Length: 353
Ligand SMILES: Nc1nc2c(ncn2[C@@H]2O[C@H](COP(=O)(O)OP(=O)(O)OP(=O)(O)O)[C@@H](O)[C@H]2O)c(=O)[nH]1
Image 1 (cartoon, helix red, strand yellow):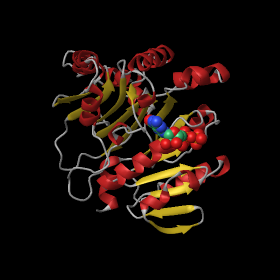
Image 2 (cartoon, rainbow, N blue to C red; image 1 turned 120 degrees about the horizontal axis):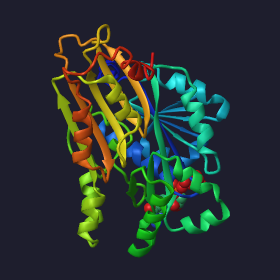
Image 3 (tube, rainbow, N blue to C red; image 1 turned 30 degrees about the horizontal axis):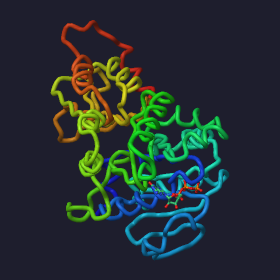
């Protein structure tokens, strides 16, 4: 239950931006995340323009003061406008609050790019930008695009696209919407959802604080995929499934090649997280790396009692598992490599310090 343990283990708190056209399902997503995060013991901070949007009644409000609600399960909810965003973030990432992740809902008409810029410009090493999740109303995408052509550009910069409300349309239309989204954004993974029910693990590390047991109200990736599979073309869904590729090595990594992997992740790769060992003089510390759609954040800390070794996990949809492995394998330093004194700079420039 200790918050210190959490921040030790996790490094900076990820700040995920949720955007989408009016009525696409952003609030539904926040409520789903709050429910499932609370059930798992994850402490989530939510920033919204208007409390009324989030179903706080269902979440056992225990206290409310100064535009902040403390939710019974350790989650926090704040109202915020553009001017107050940086202050709200800085105050939410205080270790005493003990949050695992923060989610910001962009109001339906907000320009996601400016919100992302506001988040990335907050100079606080205790937080890191955690990517843009864009919610699409699959039943109205065509219609909304006609009146709001800027929607295409929003989808294009997303790191993860939720193709939501698929219960309202036939399979054929769903496939057409998926194809259109893929055309607008070839690299971001897509998740097909009903009521925005995604696995929170896709957005941030889900802390397991109480007992590690089945989490009511939350569908795991496996369950989601199984549900998607039922009644659909099985072959198609096997290929559409999420993959998580784990890589470990006792040999040190080559910093230049690893930095390239983080900055230009393989197609479909949404998240990369890991602990990396470089055998570079003065840089033999334990490097904690986070990548979200090419946005990289690195922390450095002592190994302590731990034996230096590398462990990296890549999560995505339609990932070429063999290719990811091959790329990471190729990033292992070889004894025959020429001395590359500047190689580590590619990693250091992402340091959060
Ligand atoms: N049928 C169906 N309805 C959904 C789904 N997801 C959300 N809704 C409903 O769509 C309506 C709008 O959802 P919200 O989550 O409020 O959408 P929003 O993006 O927050 O809307 P704004 O705040 O107006 O931008 C609500 O009535 C939801 O219950 C879904 O997958 N299927």
